[in-house]
Image (cartoon, rainbow, N blue to C red; front, side, top):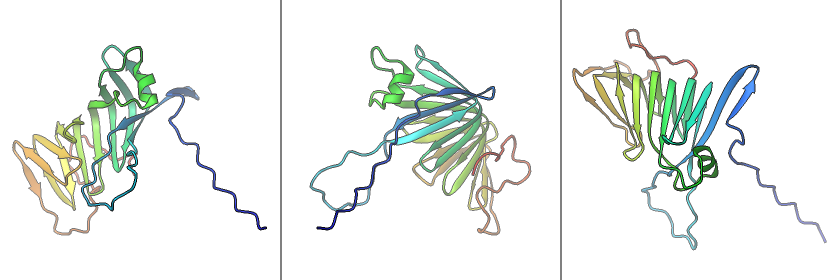
Length: 215
């Protein structure tokens, strides 16, 4: 009787076991946070059993990390690089404000365990902020992320580039789930003569924005 092929082994995924480690004198902070998945609006075929939705992991890398349990916040500083799905963010510093941790647990323990009670409420990115989405890129000196509304509020010379068109103003609301930006105060829009230019192209005179380290 022919032998049956072996079943493929499952990968051993999981969160990083250490958030701080010394690598030749440099501290690398790595944190994985769980965020609710985006709702799928398209109709799907009926299933016999409903499978639980996989949470969207948010990974933050930085030179330094400091967790404050009483304030329910985690501060990242130095070459901050955040990845959440298709969204990429880089900045000099980032403060992540969490919902209150469960009784008897620290922010690190609850974030590592993926508890439903531990979620991001808001984030504050400062210094050379660059936000990349599949169709847009934004630059600002300061960006505040509001998880409940799925948007960034950009200030300090904010600029959004979409299909080569450049939009600037005193304050820009940058929606992450919608292809939409709301510009307030002394708005300026420069239309590109060619739609073939990449949204990540940056012209002169765009303030403190930088594109290094984002791919």
